[in-house]
Length: 353
Image (tube, rainbow, N blue to C red; front, side, top):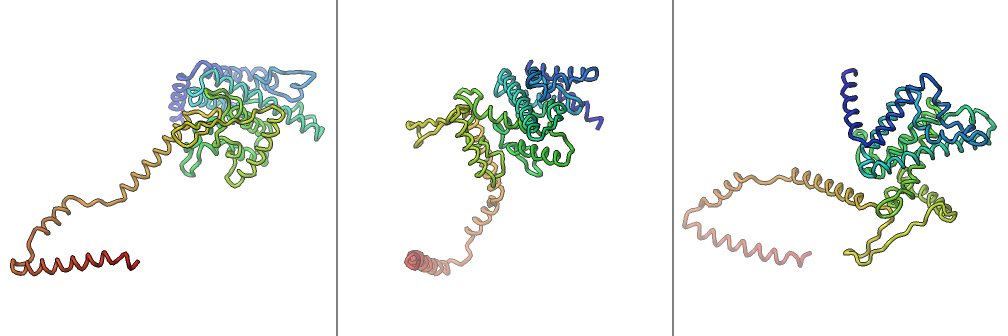
């Protein structure tokens, strides 16, 4: 194990060096606040406490700082890995500014939604620990957001081969694992809440509000909310999601989906949705071509082609006379008769069918 740590550290530093100033700055702040936690309680001062976020305290700054605070070294490792992966895979597609906006939107939403959830829990149970003992902190909410963004951009890629796990199922698979761990009391409720609200807020932002060259959001079918669930549940989830979306459109929280029909396209009719990127269509076309080439290669490998040596032997045998000259004429007559009979059989065959 010790011999792999220097290699992993060297690879991590090399990847970090190729990222932008935004990624490096966030990583530096996470490390600095972790070192500062040995002297002061950074989780209390910079993490979201539901009772202190709302009136009369208004600790509003915690919405921007809670994701940068960690208590354990393994949590720091998860945070740094999440940031570097986002900088490596998402920043080339979006740019540094858009990645920073995504980081801020997801983390602020996690803080607000988590605080409101614990406030509602307090109103139902009248238990003060839900207001003043709970701390929402860490990068787990942003991890959920990064996984949702990777589902959007590279959902068809394979994460594990045995068992086969694709990127598009990873967000809900991790949510299921955290839910089971929460039921067994192995993790605290703030961890499950942070990750769950990170997944939800990132999907809402990417689905409806993120700016693209062709509009806002991503209304493609492969990024619908129902696709996060197993296929057996997708019809029910899709029905509920459409109902919620209709209500949000009526209260003007979301905009109605507008489809553009290109009648003059080479095909019959071309439908384009706002936010769909041509790069995504090109990526899917390349994947389809790759799968087709692999299938054709397997078919060619299975087919057995005759060798040239066998053909030469057959030609040699055909050129060698097997009968004397006298009997050759009678053989040719018999051969012609057989060809004629076979010809008649061939012509009569369709009438029998």
